[in-house]
Image (cartoon, rainbow, N blue to C red; front, side, top):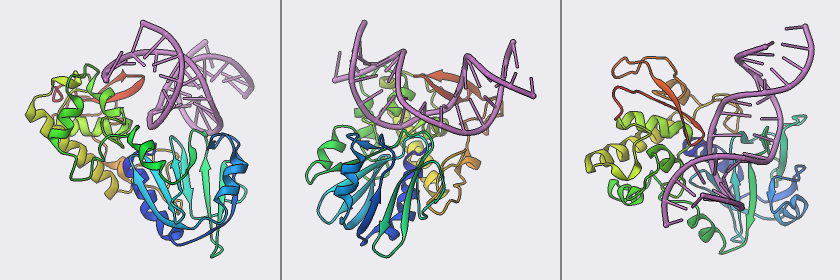
Length: 271
DNA sequence: ACCTCGTCCTGGTTGC
DNA sequence: TGCAACCAGGACGAGG
């Protein structure tokens, strides 16, 4: 499931193909891909736009055009951008044709993903109302993290999945970060001591940076734009490892459910 | 303001 | 063997 490291890996791989290119043809056969549900209108608006830059904010890809419009792409669970037309693929939901003749396809088996075309000036307020700090930037500090968690009674895991706390963590990297931080996912979020906040801050950075270095984790659907897989799944310390020994203390990892999400942790060394 | 839960979606797996 | 039930989870809106 694309979280920050997966989306960042896609961004790095796809931006050279898009930047500086004009969209000469846009096809969006899935009527539910765009918000609002107007794929014909969105496709018509995108034609002729020239890409200035491809950015990322949290789990969003931000395709910025020279017109100062922006296309906000969220991959949700199974979305993927490919540097290929993917002809014949039944799950292709959109196809871009660029002015150099290359094509970029958007594939999404489960159709949770969304494309949103924003007018100049709309992007910043849209993102600011939904997303907290960008965890890999210098402005994200242990102090800031503490401020975002202060007073909150929800389980730590639920608070970290909330994109307004910080942007980009999903079910995988939250479990990994909590394992590195030696913090129990059910801990009340607002009760962390300063030392625990520093550990959590470092652990979040560590899990996300490793994920980016490994180009994300491929469990089933996630792919890079060339169709290859990430390798972060080989580095998992907690996620999905029911019954396997903790790499720190050897205790069998525990699986539970928090906020409707499967959660893995070590009951001995995470407190 | 905060928190929890249901909903969306489809393919793979599990259970009878 | 066949088929139904279940499971995966990010964002969002409803309701407490």
